[in-house]
Image (cartoon, rainbow, N blue to C red; front, side, top):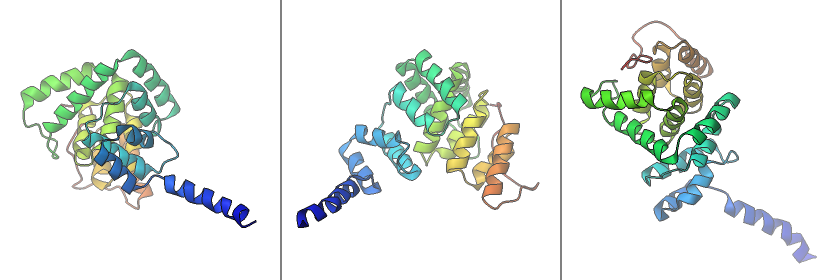
Length: 226
């Protein structure tokens, strides 16, 4: 009888010990365990902050995701229409080309200050043109992922997203703002020149106790303007 009574407790202890924690994520990063980190980043059952931590670890490990991994990560914040478009994009764009777009986005952010100014306009113009010509959904998916996975670059990624003004990306950007936004980010949306981003900025402000008023707000990037 004693043994029978202990079995449920043992099961509970085993399940608890397998739960994902920030400590485990740090350990997996230290061991270069990209597979374990990728699994956490793609699981809807994991807490958003743990998924974000896993993505941050993967970024530091220079992770090269498959198209399926990109799709599953994006699907966690996307609308039904967004997911359908992403499925099509992952079929039309090769993993290599996804990687190339990702590289161009990071290179562009490296040339962009947090004031929204380019350090090398000639090089930035070339990158900007390539991104504008790339598959729109693929660009939007990567912008979302990099916004989440690179906190030190988050502002610049979002400023780049606004400058690119990719048609149809507004819903994705609003989803990122809702999940990971802050006041300066919301002000960038309000002043971006995009009606949909303005609506997203207003929604974020209302849900965080702010009132939208005219004044000296952030105006570092304009929708679709280099």
